[in-house]
Length: 185
Image 1 (cartoon, rainbow, N blue to C red):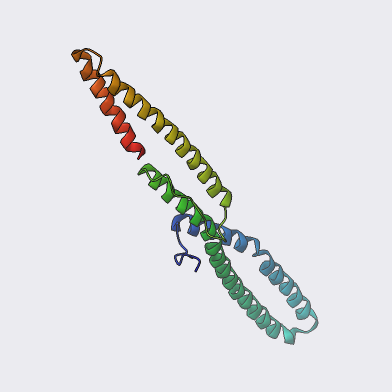
Image 2 (cartoon, rainbow, N blue to C red):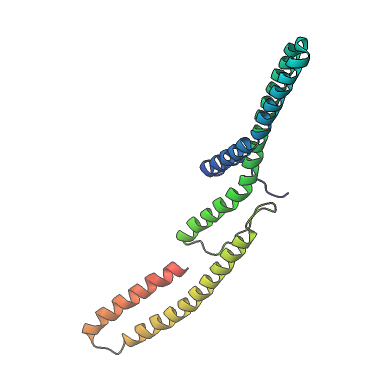
């Protein structure tokens, strides 16, 4: 069974801000038509009042009902846009969150894991770049490890033939090389 996250607010600060900004932009841009309808209805009411004043009250009530309906639809539409943006931003925030976890693991010395994103997530190329970078780092690390091993062997062999006062320095160098080797493992 494929893994899917249940938490949709992975990075609430980003996701809520992103959703609010998109919703606000949609809300502001869609306020044009209620004002246009209101203006059109006022013009119609002015026309009706000059030709048939008895129908003005009924048309004014229809205008009020229409505007209330439009406001309610707009609020519902804005709520839907907000929720859709939370789900959409989840597919952006998820990969970034997972990448941050991998960077944290890398700082702790766990470089061998491969990074994969869920099927519907965005930025799959980011996972590929991360994996390629880590593979390059690990290859260089292995080459350095081999070289450090050779140097450590050379230093320990050298310690056998140098005077006693130089053995302390070589012992310290050997100790540091072993410390470095321990970090590679």
